[in-house]
Image 1: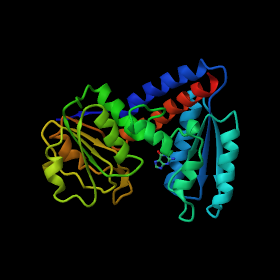
Image 2: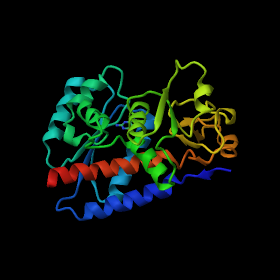
Image 3: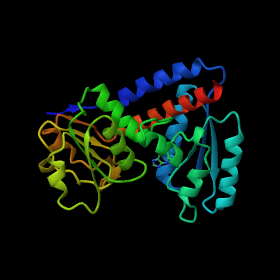
Length: 279
Ligand code: GUN
């Protein structure tokens, strides 16, 4: 029976540390949160991030913009936030409405305020092993592996999903920790052949029921990044939790696993930015 990784408890610990650090700074750290449009899931995520800020003694500046907002006016807002000394971090919630180019918007954020670690400058620094910020979800996963003393060095690590937000940076961080990393995706042939070999399996695809017990090695660490809904509307991940829990060595629940850690790592990044700006 797997050890359940308690993301909620670890996130609370990380946030307590962030709050203590924030209290020690000469000026309250600030996060600007930009939400364009009415995506219901994004609204929930953004509200959660603002709640975390309040808990950690971080000021949040909310900017709710209509779905029809032009790229020009969004870029103008980002320019203003880049110059605002109260704002240490800028978070533009993704996905953006289809007429807005995410790459252009991300590139407009000042790299020293890019607390999501999405800007090409920060992606480069992170990939080169000299990070300013760490991408929130992959950093949260690494913190969970560390907390539970799950070995990575020399181990077979398999990441499912190659998104810029999770899969690619997750593979980079595991590689830096001397894992032997395979990045699988929707075009991978015979997925189970890879997952069955994994000592550490991270799934970030967004397909309920993707990872079944026969695909998991006995004793493996199974980290479920996905946030799906089942037919009755309940949150669930990619992993068939009950069956895999009986076989794995460690497993993260959904909810209460990776999600809270992502948000806690955002708080850590805001503190990093605030220290940069207040040094
Ligand atoms: N959409 C889904 N995850 C994220 C995230 O970590 N940051 C932002 N800005 N948008 C997201």
